[in-house]
Amino acid sequence: MKKRMFFGFACFVGFSLLIAWQFAVAELADLQKKDDTIKKEKTELVSSQPETVLFV
Image (cartoon, rainbow, N blue to C red; front, side, top):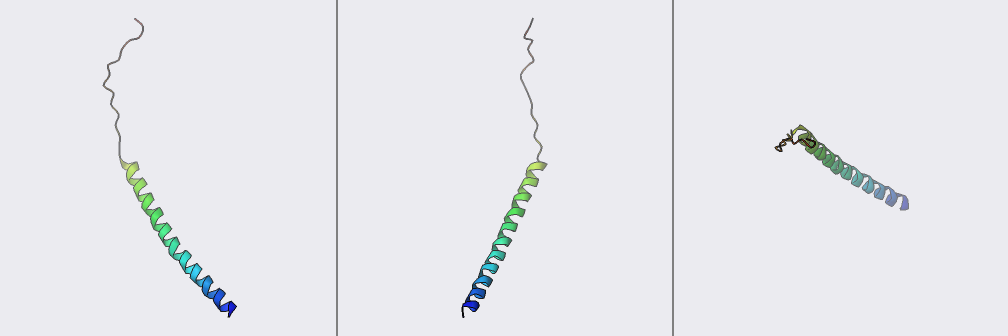
């Protein structure tokens, strides 16, 4: 009886880990998709201050 309970509990834990693994993989894939969109954006910096000569 104890052996049967152990294997039942082990199967329950194993299936729970498989489900948790699937959620973790989905979250990781979602994070990687967001990183790709950030890398594709282009940022331009513009300076509007006139150049001044410090030593005259």
